[in-house]
Image 1 (cartoon, rainbow, N blue to C red):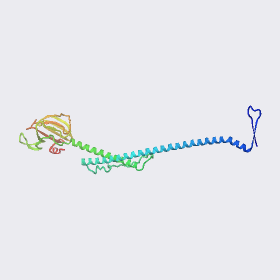
Image 2 (tube, helix red, strand yellow; image 1 turned 30 degrees about the horizontal axis):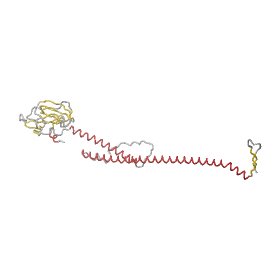
Image 3 (cartoon, rainbow, N blue to C red; image 1 turned 60 degrees about the vertical axis):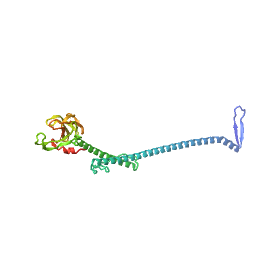
Image 4 (cartoon, rainbow, N blue to C red; image 1 turned 90 degrees about the vertical axis):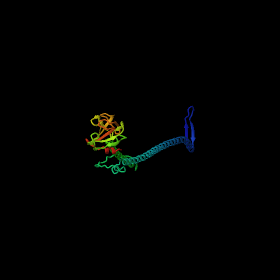
Length: 303
């Protein structure tokens, strides 16, 4: 038997409640259950909130990881495509190099674009580099391509220098025809002098033609004389370097002056018959290291 005394305000005497054990348990359960249920509900809600946050974090991490992986794949695909393009350029450079070697008539053994240029030197210890992320195969391909490009660059540099020197020599070496329309009326060497009939040495070749025919430079060089000279009439003299000098005599009028730089094929004067001459023609001479040489060889070397 459980007796409960309630003191209620405004009541003259306390209220007594007599409960049996069974009724007491029922009342206690009725008072405790709401608290237990409220606590359970709060715990469940908190657990659900925590679980949702964890799932959201994991999901965000997965999405971020997938995004990084996708971007890496895209970059790798672009890198592989670029590598293929560069390899195609190397093949094209090799083809151009072989064509230039053939056109220049060079020794293929010296300029073989299939192999790297010959080089060497003492061994140098490699510089240690910090470890980094490497992709198997791709890095080796990039290194090999870089070496190929370096080799081709060296070979093209040497080939360019050689061709430039050859072009320079072609430019300053007398060769061609000083007049387009003309014919050789007197050769180099001993002949009968046209004025005296005596045997005399002719220091050049005479090319007969029409009065006023343009006379062109046989090679590039510097004008060292332009004017009248005894026996030659009007004369143009050009120094081409490497010991070469050319002379153009009996001109009607000179179109260049001393100190002028002239290019191969440039018009120097007009054909005439000034000085010791029997008619319109060009007296052409070639000097090598201060001595006159037969100009026919240079006239026949027209390119």
